[in-house]
Amino acid sequence: MAEPARRLATESLTARYGTFAAVKDVSLAFAGHQVHALIGPSGCGKSTFLRSLNRMHELTEGATVEGRVLLDGEDVYDARVNAMQLRRRVGMVFQKPTPFPMLSVYENVAAGLRVSSPVGKVRGKALDDVVEKALRQAALWDEVKDRLKKSAMALSGGQQQRLCIARTIAPEPEVILLDEPTASLDPQGTQRIEDLLFDLRQAFTIVIVTHNMQQAARVSDTTTFFYVGEMIETGPTRRIFTAPRQEQTEAYITGRFG
Amino acid sequence: MTSATAAGSRRRALRRIRSNVMVGLMLAAVILAVLPLVLILATLVIKGASSLNVAFFTRMPVPAGEVGGGVAHAIVGTLIIVGVASLMGLPIGIAAGIYCAEYRSSRLTWITRFVADVLNGTPSIVIGVFAWTLIVARQKHFSALAGSSALAMLMIPMVLRTTEEMIKLVPNSLREAALALGYPRWRTTLGVVVRSTLPGIVTGSMLAVARIAGETAPLLFTALGSQYFSTKLNQPMAALPLTVFTYATGPYEEWHRFAWASALVLILVVFLLSVAARLTIGRKRHG
Image (cartoon, rainbow over all chains, first blue to last red; front, top):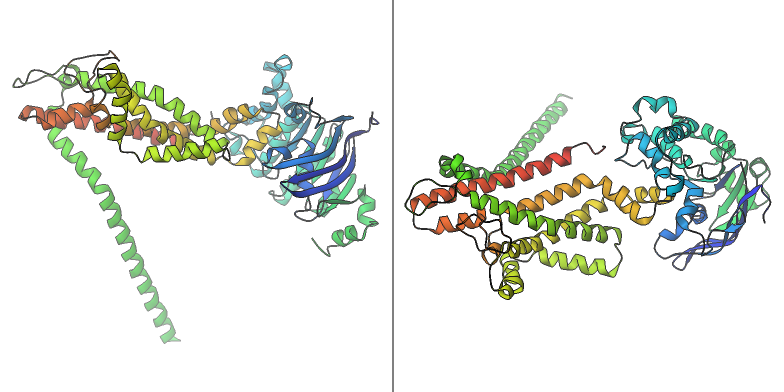
């Protein structure tokens, strides 16, 4: 068994689209209750790597995975693991806000709980509490508490993204994966999400893909640098940004390419 | 300086003239496009409205030569035939459309889409003859059910394609968001994808219903038409398009007036369905 602090780890993970290997032989461990940033230029495989962690990668046609992804010591690609149940334990937030357009703010947050097993189904007041807690955690409660029954589409882009975060954390996953969550937001919206990540790591293990190096430096405890599908370097964020050991890492973070 | 300004204002004037000419041309095109509809409606109202009264909707036809009577049997017949056709055609068309949109790369999708396109282009009289061969000829009698089946065959490809197009508009990110929450595939499709396009699917369905409500040719070989009031699906049944056909080709002046009035009722039904379809599009999505 892995030590408890290591919630999530990959072993020789290779992810392909057809014959093209987007991620090559990556072994990486994520400590619990930390924010872990994945950085690198476009097309370096960081998003594909992220999508391999909750088995979203395999939904793309022709996509295959080799190697192992361990969640609390258990291989998520094991035949006995149900991908749907896995995704309830490893939540995901996307680049563009994706609230369900036909649902209200409240129903959006509750959506993940509506599909959990019938035994553990949350209803009525208990559901109200979960929704409120998730919205508070996502720092959105004060802005939407008076319009929970209104359409989620009426919210601003930044609010929609926080709503998506609330929707992801409501079923209480163990890990949250964020794929460039602030790429479509203005600076204010970005800052709110960054502040949020700082608080959320107390409850969750967070992996965030970002194009923005300043963002990685601001929000993460650990940073991993990807380049053309390979993991080049990983370490405490402070060290990666002040004393990178690999030449490519230094070239990237000093802005010489990417 | 002054000459430059003069040249500038001349250019602006020319531009304005050209703009006005273009807008005028477009307006003319719009009028040309709408004109047939207006003319049809006007003719129907002028020739048919005078025959419209309560009896027209509630009474049965009277023998030729007598004045009065109505087409209640045909109105009820159309409602039954189209209703049964919708019950058969809509679920199949919508389900097939969902399949084609959600499993785009499957071979079955390619075949289904191809067949639907061919069927969409098939003249409705061919569908009528086909239904005749398949049902009427075997049962050895005409029936409303055969008519409904023919109309359902016409509906399926229409509904299939509109449903597919509507669902294709759903961004993939929405599907992924649901799957990432742990939704099973079927629930993602029905609970998120289909649900968010429901107004569009309803609209497409209503337009298809409106389209088949006016079909005549497939019914000639199947439901046949009838002078009597009937609600039996395994018997010949009257329908408004057939009434129009029979009365319009008949020798009596009174019949001709009835044909115009029936046509007016038919087009009003289609018109109402289309308006309802448009209103559904405009309705707020959230609910």
